[in-house]
Length: 418
Image (cartoon, rainbow, N blue to C red; front, side):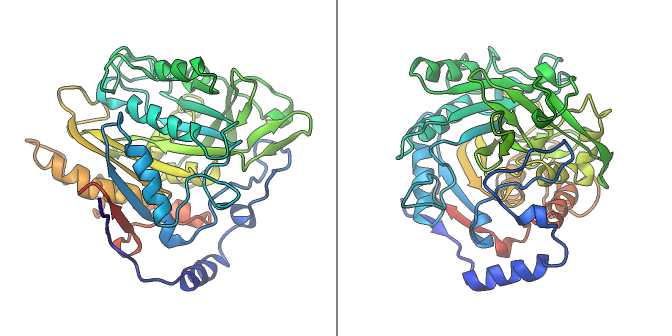
């Protein structure tokens, strides 16, 4: 199917020139430098966060495909990305590709809510299958993780990777069922529920602390966020710091470049913060309990932009729009969800949230009696409307030296779903 593409007419030279000028005086050195291995350091040490070396225009390109999660939609999406210059696989011929054969891929999902409130497990399965088919042969590890905070959610006690009533064509297929499927074939996939240690405060591996838990940085940012993040060891012995990367005990150093976060939220409304999308999904990376709920309370002030920019930016954001939540979320039931059968992908989480809320969620919520269409508007500028805090989040990301946009003139859409 021929893609309908809106092309932004900006040359690569002009894009990179503007980026350099705009950030020369304000971007901290650590935010833009990208060494292969970060030095060992304490929990507050500067960290270089990996990001693809590509132009702004390509970073804010959104790729859209039809899929129900069980078909070849992910493969078609990857082919579309490649056709337009964004290579999914890093190979000798495509050194700028996103995923190298030995990477540790952390798929950050939504798992606090059952039924249609969590990320579609068919989509998770298809994505892992695509990683498994890496042309250089995948020798790394895939981790599926989230933090339901040990509170609220469908069971009133946080998240689960093993809901009996899951979001999938076969409603019994939980995240752990997907993990076990790949285990059988010998593929290194693990599920880590961060709820299990969300109330455990720890130090970094570099400080000699090997326990699973959350590192808390002892300063409160302007958005009200006290940054915290998980560190843990997988069942394969891989030691992961969400902020610093993969810990090598023998060299006492972190490999930041090897850890790639794939942010895979389900699109839905939210009763307090209007929209759960790529930015709001990062609420599953701090510990709300160890920071006196500062994490959740900071969302409306742009706190998840702070969290992204000062822990680890996602390498890719995949918006699950197979079933979307159109009524008062963040719960979304089998009866209330709307089947859209689409996925959308972008490196830029803000651009993806802007487009998905405006062109997918808003029209559908407008059809619901007493719906929340006005509140999910990404162009809204008043408090209590999604656009208000999305812009604050964007500013946090940009102030740290990363690119994000809500300007439609800077967003390219490659839509293969029409």
